[in-house]
Image (tube, rainbow, N blue to C red; front, side, top):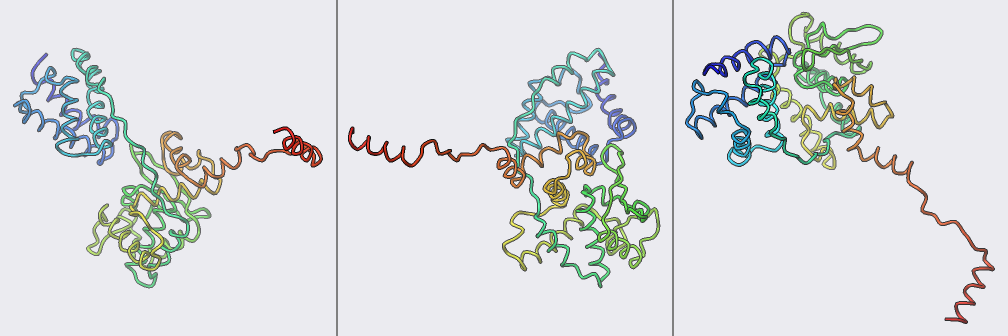
Length: 335
């Protein structure tokens, strides 16, 4: 096998396969690229092998496992991050299996490296009371706070991922008898999500008052007129959550991230009795198995199901009062 085959395929993978054939999102490509930057740095430091000299034979299951240990012990990453890095490595070597059959066995070894079991974290979400309080704080008479409120209500109402919200343009909001938002999700998948009347009115007011009518420009921008970033969205959320905590110290116990709005919408729909299939479609999940995490972690749903299906622990009366008295007399006289 030629020495340059590995670097050739790695370049093709990132330059062509991921962006053009799989339509992977920029975030996915960035995450995969970070993985290989760390892997190549590890090989250079640990085995004195610079990237340009790497061959297939250098990639073994044992070395990949040592790299994963290095990530956990030296870089102190979480188990979830470790597994994400391994998933990126698996994806590349699975790609290689069908591009270069000569390295099939080598790829199979890498694909045999197992993921590490991680503790399943509970889903962090807001109560309906917390959501209402948060929405009541922005002053709609001020343009910047009207924008903030439009961001908060769309995050919640549509269950959008933060990148989906950032990528919205005015033409994605369709005002008709049923107002919808067109979200562009992972893998270039698009979904239409209904927006209720109250949220739609806020967004419409924002678009007209803040002059966000240009169909191809970002719907939400900062003071410089630039497209908002993830950090910018989180800053807005943190600002209003901080105010809400001062008003109600008993609420907002955990940190509220942009993803909490998505979780909250899913939980509230589930509590309202909406079928998981519809929640899956709203969130843009590929499988309902992913959506089931909400049903598994929602304490209200668990309590209702336990009440519904638990057997009664009340004991039926087997004896009459006269029989009970006779039994007590017998016990007194014979014991």
